[in-house]
Structure formats: structure tokens, C-alpha cells
Picture 1 (cartoon, rainbow, N blue to C red):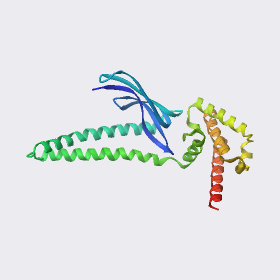
Picture 2: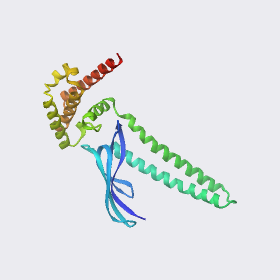
Picture 3: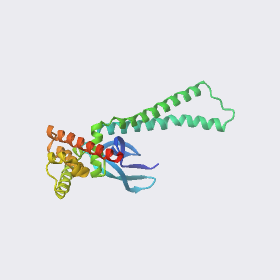
Picture 4: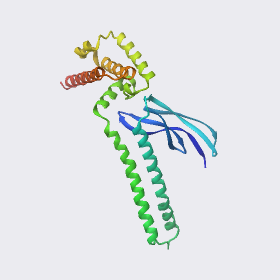
Length: 250
């Protein structure tokens, strides 16, 4: 039996577009043990590792995504629940498999009362594990509409549906720098002027303004004005989308 330790991602939750939030865990034998960091996740990179095959290995998986500013508790909870459900399914399948083999190999094999009870209990436990595991995937339906709109708009800039208000500080600061460079190249005036002429400045400018506004929340702290500006930009994005849809339909 190979003893494998390392890191991998588990607990995909709050998916928007193709971007869930996942957590990187220290793992043993493929099971999540200790949460290390959460990500707005896009893809997995290459495996890396060392050790002796069939004896002991240390393996790691590269993560392509944007690190969150803190570990996502919902992702951690879901990862543990799914791990427990997986163990329940495997353990409850063992007696069912064993009795099935006995029945196939021995034509006179009979299911006596105790064996029938074993089958019933194992079947109930198996069904419970499967249903509970499937239920955890319903959490993706609980993403608030405002968060979904923010992340989808920011995805057009970042390539990942992330909210810059909840990424690591150094990443948020880099987002501000990049957004400012873009807005300066476009000779963008202040936010109020842009919102008065959304059709002129277009969606790319609005998306960059939203990324910068959300990143400033992480960099300088949340405020009523920044949250209000977020809502104003979202309304402008929606209005611009409605205008384009109306033009296409006409």
C-alpha cells in the first residue's frame, strides 16, 4: 500500500460561471486533513512529487486561480462532509460486495435473517451517504445575485469570476495598478462622468472601474461610498446590456 501525503484542492462551492471557490488542503491518502488556502479556481496544473513508488510519496498539485484573502469556511465544511460521505459509501459497499460474491460463487448460498439485515442496513447507509454527498452540491445555488453580478463583470477583466474585495491584499493592489493603467490609456474621467456617458465609454471601462472599486475595498477597507459606487457601476453595466439587447432586437 502506497502512503501518499501532499496537497490538493477540495470543497468546490459558490460557483459563478466556471469559477468555483475551492480550498487547498494538506492531504493524506487523498483525504483532506488541514485547510491551507482558498482560491477562486480556474484549473489544476501539473502534478509534482517525490518519494518511493509503492512505499511513500509526497505529491502536490499546482493551482491556477486567484488566492482568497482568507480560508472559505463553507468550502472547508463541504470538503469534510464530502470526504465523510465518500468513506461511508466505500465502507457500506464492502459487505454488499462480499455477499454478492458469495451468492455468485455458491449456488446454494442463502440469505439468512442476519445476512438480510446486513444488506438492508448497508443499503440504507449507502443511500444516506450518496444523498448527503449530492446535497452538498446544492450550495452552488446559494450565491447572492449581487455577488454573482460582481464576479461575472470582473471575470471579463480578470479571466476568473472573482471579487477583488476578497482576494489577497498584494493581489488587490496589483489589480488597482493595472486598472489605473488601462483607464489612463483610455483617458477616462472620474466615475460620475463615466456613468453619465456609459454608451460612449463602453463595457470595458465600466468593468475596469468595477475591478478597481472592489480592489480598493480590500486595500483601504469597506465604506458606504465604495459599496454605493459598486451598485452604481453594476446598474450602468445592466443598462448598457439592455441597450445593446434592444438594439440587436430592433
